[in-house]
Length: 262
Image 1 (cartoon, rainbow, N blue to C red):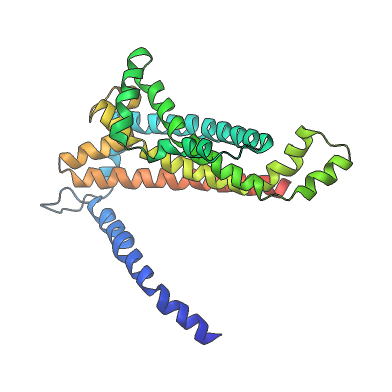
Image 2 (image 1 turned 45 degrees about the vertical axis):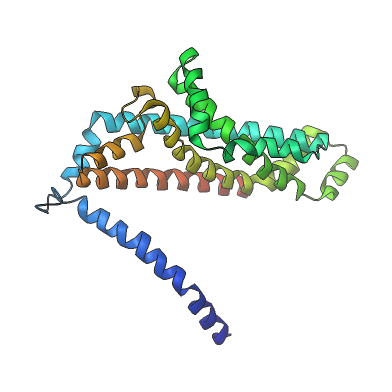
């Protein structure tokens, strides 16, 4: 057993080294830069950069918009993709072309799809077009995730429930939902990650200084980077990282409590 564990250690050593080199060390440098006045003088100023970031009007607008997009887009995406997955499963659609068409939006380059939604924003508004772009782009992928989770559930559960007189709604509440709840939690976290990545499309559509309704946290950090203001950049990045860690922890707690109550 000891020889087996030692072997796994040597195999995983390059991964551990890479994680330390490319994640932990830069994270440490970020903390260092966030408590100095500039990259030139390197004078320690404590939490002044954090105070400046939290008191900055545009950073607060960015955090508000980012949170609004997350709380709106991710639940809508999960609900629509889960509904579509259950419909596809019940209708027994096995057409590979249909499933390929659903996954195609995520494979298209951002530069090819943003002009379409940029024109849509002319008839609606910038914020609504970003909501539509996010849901359209990732709907097929999340549908396939939920479809795989539904297919993994044994039919014996439903046969037994049918014998007991359960209807479709009862089967969903008592069988389907509890068994795919871990998948929903996983999809929610992935949905948050993908929602943050929508900045690329927003940037292509609206530039570095867009309308305040679509001004995201990445806009603020990107603009600080262009100004070579590394202390404020790292401070805002660490505040944003804390925000994301807290949001992820909330998702984990909700899923765990939900599973414990089943």
